[in-house]
Every structure is written in C-alpha cells, then in structure tokens.
Image (tube, helix red, strand yellow):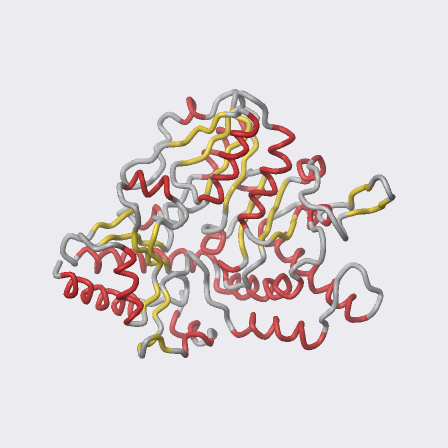
Length: 408
C-alpha cells in the first residue's frame, strides 16, 4: 500500500504555498513533480561529470557516457525490450511518434492504405497520422466511443481490415483516464499484418508496460510524466523495423563514415540520436524510474483508482456538475474530468488556483474528443501516488467558491 503523505516528503515543491495556501497539485497528467533524488542527480551530473558523450576518451566523457547508456539499459529492462539497441531517446513522446510517422510511415504508407486511431487520441497521436495520410493519399479511420468514452469495439473487424497498414492507439486517455484494451486491438491488427504504435505517455507512468506481452511494434512515452525531467522521451521499436527505417535527423554521432558526397549511418540506436543529446536529463530519468519502480505500478494504479472513486463521489454532491469518463474506476486511471454548469473551465481553474489548487483546464490537446463530448473544454483533476483524499477535499472546497461567485 502507498502512504502518500510519506512520499510527499520526498518532493521539495510541496513545501511551497500558492496564493497563501498549501499547494494542492492535481495536474499530473500534464507533468509530475520531481523528488529530491532526481534533482540531486541533475546537479551531481553538472558538478562532477559534465561532458559530451560517445566522443571523448577522457574520464568525464567516459563517466557521462556510462551514466547515459545506463539509463538506456534501465529503460530496456523496464519495458521488456529484447535489446538495449531498440531504445531510442527523443525529446518526448510527441517527437517519438513523429519520428515513426516521418520514417516508417513515409517508407511504408501508400495511396489507398488505411491508418486506424481511436476517437480519444491526444493531438500528438492524431495529427502526425492525419498529415501522413494527406501526404500519401491514405485514409484515416477512427474507432468510435461509447458515451462514457470507453471504446466501442463492436465493429472492430470492419475498421481494421486488409487495407490497414498501421494502428496507433493510446494506452490511457489524457482527458478521461479510460484505459484502452491494447492487447485486443493489437491482436486484430496482427491478423491483417498491420504495424501498431502505442502512445504510452499517460499509461506507462501509472501502469508500466511490457512490450513483449503487449505485442506492439512501437512504444512512445515521456520522462516528465513519471517524476523525471522534461525534454526526455523514449521510442522503443522492434529491431527489424528500426533497422529498415531511415534516420530522422542528421548530424554528429548518427553517422559512421562521411565523405564530401555521402555518408553511412551509425548502428542502432544512435542512428536516430543526432547531435548532442539531453545528457543530464536522461541520466536523471534513471533516478526517477528507479524511484517510481520501487513504489510499484500495481500500487500506483490501485491508489489512482481509489482517489478517482473518492473524487467522483465528492464532485457528484455538487449541484448540476457534469462528470466525464467511466463511472467505474476499474476502467480507467487517475483522471477525473468535469464541468460546472454555466461556468467556463478556465474560470474554474483560475478560482481554484487562487486557493492553491492546480488543475488543468481546456481541450487538453484533444479537440476531436471535446467535440464528441459536446463541450469546448473541461476541468481536469489528475492524480499520482503523492496525492491524498485531503487534496481532493481542498479542491472541492475551492470549487464551492466557484458556485458562490457564479451563483450556480
């Protein structure tokens, strides 16, 4: 079991106040806070081994290289990759997905081919495929939703067909927390020989993932949503696919030999890591991953769901409030979307901020899903292992001020 009050002590940011109030941070789907061990790892790198990697024979470079590649090994073990060579570091999950679209997609998608996504995708796992379809004359198909934003898979066999070349799906919705049945959809894709891309930006930090068990072909996720630094993402891909893909960017370290007129590419994974990478933050990501793994993903997801259940109960007691997503917490993760009647979500967020409560408001980079929900924006509470029922109580008390101010 998780004791969030004890874990919260590991995070210096929770010592501060916002507008004279104790900070209540409920915007974890956007980014998570960083424990002291991650902050210490960052400063230790710059204090003791700051140097470029892969290129130096001096001590600092060798130490930095070892630490950087140590993170790659840790990530590979964490996701069940068959080789560390299959783990590519990017600037985030968004870049990882764009890398696949711009390399594998450009090589393998043709006019008349079909790409399948779901009706709840983040723009980062929708727009790259939209644009690829436009460039190549392919067709984008969408798996529909039930009213509670769970997927309607009743017509899956008519959506994923012999023409399907790629299926791109989130592990968890960033708007409603719905958890996607990955293995069922990936199995349907495999039947027709389609490649699968999993956007694990929301799901991996709360559930973990094993790519061998899941059966996907590509996985993207980010460091900053699981207590690591911003600016670090992971692309995992099956070796045979990565080997066949062209580079995404050109420059130092991704080349093997260069002449005046041509170049040959470095081995995996460095073929996709042009230039000086985000060394310090990659190294600090290892500290974050170790920290989160110690807590345990089963414990994290159980804690998320307990908070969602409690939050939905408390919010439901407020007059006329609209809740989004599944009413059954077992169908989702640590996210609750809501709207106060007659009050724009941005106004709700601003008033909560006056009371030290940080939530997210807007379309959450998922405008097509907002259209399906019939609203331009929602307010969103999103939880992680350091959140408590008391955090929710303070948020609900602040929401009551919204009702008072707007006379709802």
